[in-house]
Image 1 (cartoon, rainbow, N blue to C red):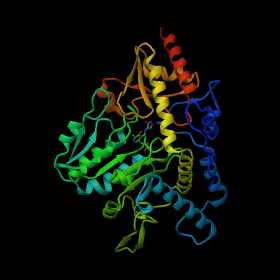
Image 2: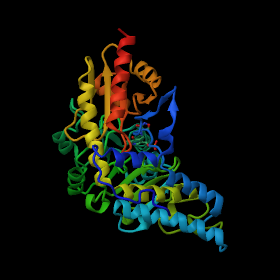
Image 3: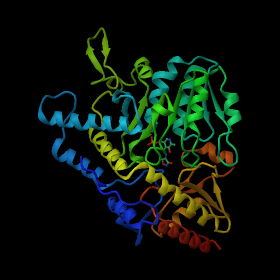
Image 4: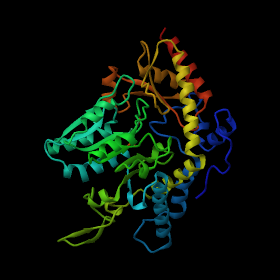
Length: 420
Ligand code: 7TS
């Protein structure tokens, strides 16, 4: 597999050369939108893809396309190799004890649903509680509501403060013996809050409660070690970490994965089938029924190589600089309010402009080639908490620059002029 970043350059925001090298890896960043150079600030929704990932996809279909785990012929072996290499890459990327603890799913959403249905639904009783926080994405709310509806359990929600931080004393109080499962987001996609999950996991474990972490906004921005965190499950999506859409990861501790029921039945997830009885396959295959997204996993392995090539420490440092610069620049705009002012934030900034609907901001700024997200960001309860219908959101990745922040600010000045 080709590494896209071969030379390590000194990497700070002042080192525009290093960023230019990274930008050159992402062909889409060269395109224009509405006659202006694209300024892509919607990375929390999905990241752009480096050429190495695109080439891996292309090469897979050009050279190796075949089904996996079931053929002795050369192509099937090559395809299986690429797929299982993807699993190994992901396992070492997040510090899993073994590749068997990595289950490939469609994305964060499917990973959470899998745990909800194959584990929690089966162990939870009427009167038990599932605990989440007030800043979850809908995909970490609705699956639990479905489980609660079907079992008579209760969904409890830890409140957040005006900065968009978890109220810790409440979390502590709410971790009662009724709670049978905790599912929390690491980084909020609408507020940018980075939750202190290490401590939160420890507190839940002190009471013997397993914990799932929604890492959708984490893995391409911050180093994760699931062994060090000691989380029981960790889920994320490939498309937010420079990989393709339609592929995601569920990490689970072996002891849980082994006790869980299969999520779907079909080919590959079995050892033997008779009409009387089916013996399920070992993990991870027990959870990967049917032909999986072979190209997606292979290319995800390549995305991991890409991130490792750039280095997560340097990515984090650059994005924090962008966050600080963008926050200061935005706050210079009269009538601009930032929603989500936690002490520990990722480079995601939700904001409102007094008297202007976020959708109008998004539409007008698009004419300047700037892509930001507007709406509730699939976190309607967060909007309700802050008493707002929607926000405009700029979210950054390693390839973004301070110059792009300046384009955003100039665009917002134009938006204000239109509405004056
Ligand atoms: N959890 C978080 C924290 C997310 O940000 C998202 C997607 C998901 C779960 C669901 O991920 P999926 O890949 O299964 O869809 N967040 C966003 C967003 O902020 N804008 O579009 C998708």
